[in-house]
Every structure is written in C-alpha cells, then in structure tokens.
Length: 228
Image (cartoon, rainbow, N blue to C red; front, side, top):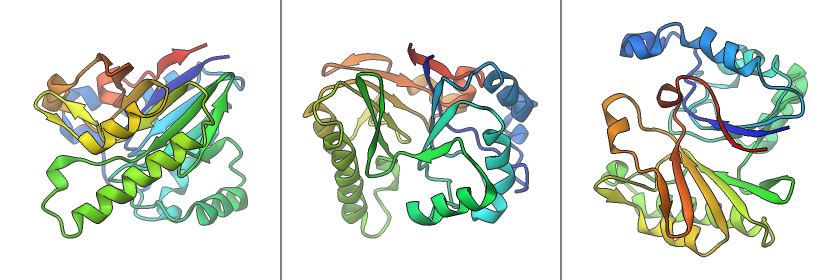
C-alpha cells in the first residue's frame, strides 16, 4: 500500500490534442502512463494533480476516464487549468456512477484520508493570469477552497496537492503560501511546469513544507511515491 502523485497527464484519447507535438519527451506518452499505472495495486492511492484530460466536456473526456479507471488504484482528481470538462462535483460523480467508473473521486472543497494523513488540494493560482478580469475574485476563491480543504484535515498532518505551483524561481503566490503555512502541511506537490519551465522548479523545504514538482513529463510519466 502506497500513496503516489502525478499531474498533467493531458490524455486525449478522443480529443485531437496529441502531446507528442511538444517534442520527444512526450513520445508514446499514453502507453507510458498505462505501463506505469499498471504497476499500482488496488491498495494504492494516486493523486492526479490537474490537467488530466483534454476533453472539452465530460462526454469527450469519457475515454480518458475509462483508460484511468481500468487500473485498480484509488484515484483523486484535482482541477487543472486545462480541465475544461470539470463541472460541479455532484454532476461529475453522477457521470462516473452512470459510466461505472469506481476508482475515481475528487479533491475539491474537501479532503481525503490516507492512514494518519490528510490529503488536501485545489487548483491554486498562477501569477501570469493576473491580467484577466476579476483576478482578485478568482484568487480569493482559490484561497478559500484551499483553506476549506485544509480545515477538513482536522489537525492531521497534511499532504497538499496543487495544480499551479505556489512558488518557483523568481515567483511566489503569498496568499497561497500563507494559507499553507497556517496548517500542518508536510508535503506540497504541484504541477503545471513543462519543458523549459521545469528548470524554474523549487524542490525541498520552504516554511516547514517539502515542495515537489510532479508534472508528468518531469517525472517521466511514472507517479512519484509520497509515502507507504
């Protein structure tokens, strides 16, 4: 039994968005994802930290969910900036139930438990989107969702999973970092950084939490083991 995490799978079994166009690092990536997930067992837990499917809606993403559901490990999905299929949790859960998907669930305004640890997460916030209208409203919403998730941990030590990095070289999101620091967050995993941007990652302890990049291309499409 072990806890794993990976982000940015960018599956496109139905949507015409093959990631191979971004270079050899993405060659045959769907098969490589399948090979790595086949090593996980039904006792394992996997966090998918956003940008899971290119599907524009739940129906277009169905093939990607079916691909993931074939592997027996329990999976918790976090919203990414390219998860256009994301709807309300009730609609998504109803869709999964109708399609017979039994291994997929969500981290969104909630937390899950793994042994003595709480698993928390949300999309987060990214500075480069600061020019969009109503950015303060969106930032405050994400901070609120993060805090709701962290509060649900009820004081347990926390593993937190964000799609957007709360910090990297030359950048930090103080609102997100302050929220993380107010709770017993031991690990904070994040995705979103690809290709040349991977060099900007920050790994290691900051403010009491260990930060780690888990984007799929950075990990070679093999989930990172968080703990056993």
